[in-house]
Image 1 (cartoon, rainbow, N blue to C red):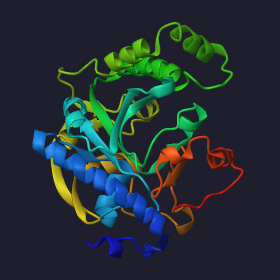
Image 2: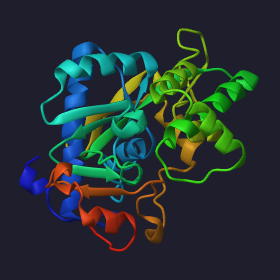
Image 3: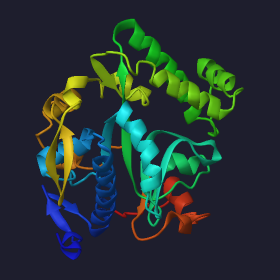
Image 4: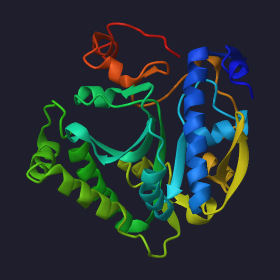
Length: 308
């Protein structure tokens, strides 16, 4: 498709998709294309998840009121991608995973375009400028059931609590305060290694299920608690003007998470439903926003910047 034709305001399912949103989508599709090429080169498997998987089968692309692209990978492929991506990375892209600058951490892997802006409120609050528009890769780990699952999730939750609040100026009390202060006696890198070791505890072992243990809140709700056989094989599906893979058991996965996912929500509920806020600018690098008052006012709710 011609770029100029794509970057036009459009009404999709009763929702107006702005040019700015289209620019964000285009940036994510370009990163996804690079990612897919790397996966093909090294024989790695991936699959769309969540709203991105719904978008594929219901809209043949993005959900009109959504702005992100989420991809799942089984842990073995995820770790291989981390290693090979470094030598394949374009000069204007960067990979984020684990402990980042200013002792901020990311439990998901982000591929970011440095020529754009996609600053997450968490990064701003922890004095880390962040980076550009991104797509996210979710590692799916082998997981047990029963009491072993509960023990693993409990440990993951404690470690995540400390890592995710390492720099936050919050006054915790009770057990949360004890957990955070206790773990902060160690270097953040050591706590991260504990976290990774716990999440991958069942790698190489035969388990029926996989899950995103790296996101304890999701894992506790069973959002991504999938049978391994549902995601081991994938099929190609049209997505905007490219093709991306969805799990062969996509219907089972989505019904588990969303119920009747093919039904459109009411007009008043058609909007982004993230548990975080992102400041987007597809035309300027995030570096241009250093010490910017716009970010402060935006994240404090003093101004409303309708970029999308």
